[in-house]
Image (tube, rainbow, N blue to C red; front, side, top):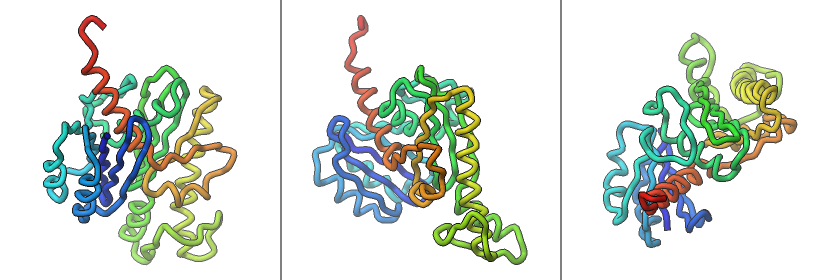
Length: 251
């Protein structure tokens, strides 16, 4: 059984896969390492893949080091099931790498736009021949709301969850809608532009804030919500590396 771990800025997600099937998962704040330890102890773990976007992992290092199995820490040098055309592959975040691996595993031979909404909004493009062209990074909901509050004298700090009309009717909804509706229009705009040359483009939505964003996106976008895309990709990377290592030099 494969264990995959996605370490974010605030939360950690861990999931167990039997071959390509997601068996169980847990999603907790990074401070609750005891929960992850108990989660892993309940199963026989054969291999583990880790995506980490933070510098300091001391809060969960002890748990990871206690695993009695090989561990792949995904980065720009890891073998992956797609062609990476990014000009600075060593700076590509492991979460983006994993999401791309998940996308090509679930939707092979498809043009894909991945919209990952968490601390940041990342938009990544994968072509039908399995090439990662590149993508864009902008602020996620919380960072936008925080910037509006800290960069002005009188605007309050607003939670991203709440009434989000297309046009705000007071200061709170004006801020929330400006951020959340703005993010939805940003995603839709990229998809519409890309579909001018990729008419069959699939749009995948993932990330910690994707559930809140889902109702704000136009049905005409025909997006596919994949909340476990990164975990699926980490498992795909594990399987790909295991298969590659098993091949003989003559193959």
